[in-house]
Image 1 (cartoon, helix red, strand yellow):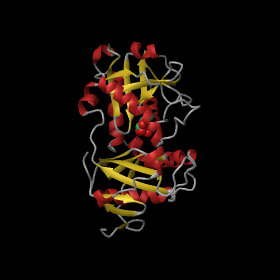
Image 2 (cartoon, helix red, strand yellow):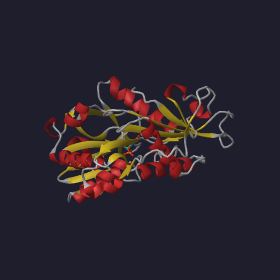
Image 3 (tube, helix red, strand yellow):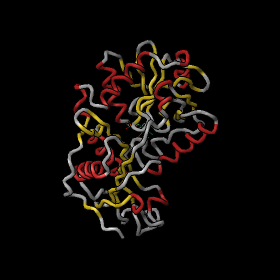
Image 4 (cartoon, protein in one colour):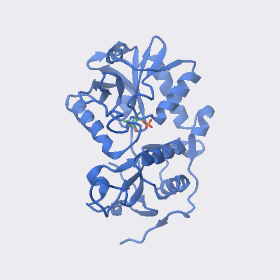
Amino acid sequence: MEQADLIWHNGELVAWEDAKVHVLTHGLHYGTGVFEGERAYETPGGTGIFRHRDHLERLFKSAELYYMPIPYTLEELRTATHELIAANGLSECYIRPIAFRGYGQMGLYPLDCEVDVVIAVWPWGAYLGEEGKRRGVRAKVSSWRRIPHDALIPHAKACGQYLNSVLAKVEASKAGYEEAILLDSHGFVCEGSGENVYVVREGQVVTPPQTAAILDGINRKSIIQIARDLGLEVVERDLARAELYLADELFLSGTAAELVPVREIDDHAIGGGEPGPVTRELQRVFDDALHGRDPRYADWLDLVEAPSAQTARLAEPA
Ligand SMILES: Cc1ncc(COP(=O)(O)O)c(C=O)c1O
């Protein structure tokens, strides 16, 4: 992975290689952490973080669901992110805030364990590749089911939960596909290993509802709004597996991947194996929104302000 110079670690900016935790960190053993994935883009007004407040709100909600008080306010983390991006001199980057149970307690009762917070930023290109964004990816329905509501909390972005995505991603990749689509235990479509999924059929955009075992993606909200603004009908309802094969168009959305067409699913070519017109149009407007080229969506960008050095300071080298 590409590196940056500095990482924000519990309120201090430390050198990338010095941002370390103890091997007995609780979150490392039991997955007791919550995180976000965000992106900042170069825009005509400067570097803009896409839907920053929405991401931070989801971070705090995920933490709350796992009884984890984050020892900073949302505003402090927002400012810290601005300072970190500026201190690293990045105009575009991926952003990874994470809050996790730290060192000091073992065992499955985590509530007496300290909560550590880290924010890292680094340059990260298209997660499923530039070619994937352009031509579409090949996906496979996973044999692994998406974590259900009665075992974990699909709507939380929590560290341990991602073992489910890891199994699906490894399985798909070993079988020669770029991405996995997970179903629930009734056979309904949930999502990709790190993306929400959409079918376009007979002019309608269909995506699984919030009651499905999905992460309620921030890009999902954005794409639903853009699609409606383009006059498309968007329906949130359960999707049967076969509807993936019968789709005129199929695509994924997520912060890391952005909007990516799926050109093949389980070896069925979708739309003749080429991204279709609805996907292309949504991708174009979405890309304009991300890069601050569409005034309708200007509010979605949190422009990075010059560092104030109020909430973070450069730690002395150890
Ligand atoms: C499992 C899962 N579903 C969906 C998404 C898409 O969410 P978002 O659009 O907020 O990045 C992600 C990415 O974070 C994810 O990990």
